[in-house]
Length: 470
Image (cartoon, rainbow, N blue to C red; front, side, top):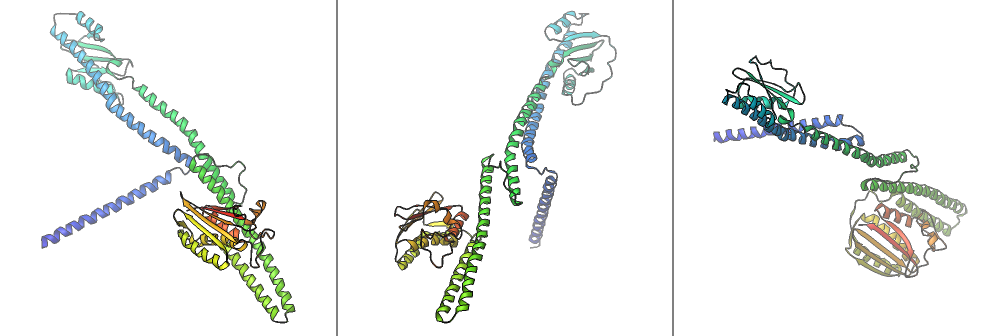
């Protein structure tokens, strides 16, 4: 029992230490990236250049390291082994034929066949070792190979003449001096690889830098346009969406947003003007009716004006409030069309409805119901027969409302979407009308990313086409 408790305590201790280590690691990682972000450039152009240059630099560094480590050193090692093997063969020939006093034939063979210039020097001490050059693969490789294959005292000079390597080897009663071309013992064409690597990098940078500048310039232009709009200044005259597709989409979205904001400001201004005018008119009637009030008929007229004012105020509030704060949910078109059929029976109107595709659409339900109610309400008010069709597919909902009413002239079909516009010549005006129904409907449609258009109807009246993403 005690052993089990001890093991459990040890396990809990290890788990606690592991959790502490993980927390410390996450903290260090966050501090590291906080430090990196502190010193990173803040401009998009500089960051984009880093994104292009950093992988290129890392990739070429890895390639250069692998090349130096594997190819350059391997080739240099093989060449140095071959040169030392030739020198070792010359030494073996001299030791095998010691009767040849001047070694003329051996020297001739070494020069003609092995491309080695061989001299015999007096048996003087070898020169003191010179300073080794920094990062000299040839010096290290050649020294190790002479030690391994010949194993005699030697002296080499790889620094003096850039094209010649001098090797001196101490023999029994003489010193063998050998001059070797550097290219025989060293991979001397490495600089070509480095030049190609650096050259291609410069060419890529020369292409990437103007390309990045051209891609970032539209973003900067868009930022300037947004800043100008925020300060109440007009949009730059040369502004238009350009650049990559995502930047173009952002530019078009900004232009649409600006148009919607300006349109809402104009509508709110017109609403305030209309409110002040309509309320002033009713208040004037109040004063006159109060001054002349003598009986029940005058009181009923006052009540009617109060109801008219209440209706107008509700319309103003609905127009000003909007429904942008409502969350998107599924809206059942079939259920709404059933309610629409009941309304048509109460109003004694003919109604025909059709639905193509899924009847469930993703919209803001209350706002979308108000949109359909405003459009179909106008059709019920001014026509005897109404047809409503809905087509839902490919992410788009198209609702078409046709009626056989008097219609609207084509020249005035955009004008009716403005607040407080009433076309008395086209349609009879209800006493409670405020001229905001179609304005509210179009605002709701555009807030969903769609729109409303008016056309001629096959029934002889007006066709309203509602098109929204769903």
